[in-house]
Length: 228
Image 1 (cartoon, rainbow, N blue to C red):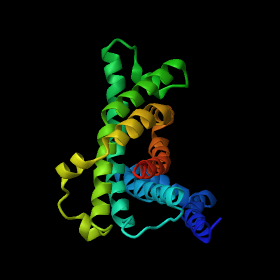
Image 2: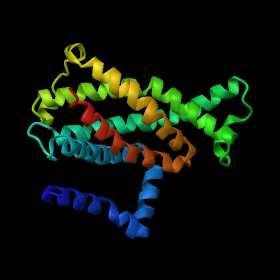
Image 3: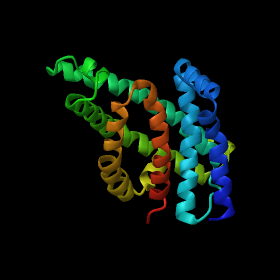
Image 4: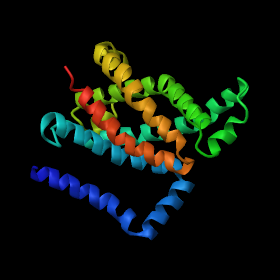
């Protein structure tokens, strides 16, 4: 293990250990998260998913840092995307059961709020499938565009806030990797099962679990971005 690995682990412990050791800290987190869910989504994804990307960089290059990588703009982008993920959770976890009721499923809302059962698993699976087929591809493509823009502008915040050449980036994207790996493999193999579990959890835990999944997402997209 390199010294940089020790520092990375130390930073993670400093960030999260207080919430396990102090009931007051955890209570503050629960209270603030309940009152300001979107704000907490920004910070949870900005921190966790950026750590995931740094871990992906370590796995693929052997180092946690590379010139022009753009840690701060990546954290900002992840924060914004995290709020979008939170919004998607609310929209799809409400809309899909409502549509299931429209199709004739009896009291889908009560099923999702009730005890673990086969119907609840099927509804959670349905929410995950719909969200990951409608929202996830757009989300992942947008992330790829911003990632490309960050690298092209030297990884600086000032460079990031210049106009993004959306058309040029989309025209030059490696759609073979985006489709063949990010969409075709990670969505059905990982994200649909993972989010099925997410929607089986109580509502107050879902965003935190999603933020932890954001670490895995950061690793997956960081590695996918470097696939040849």
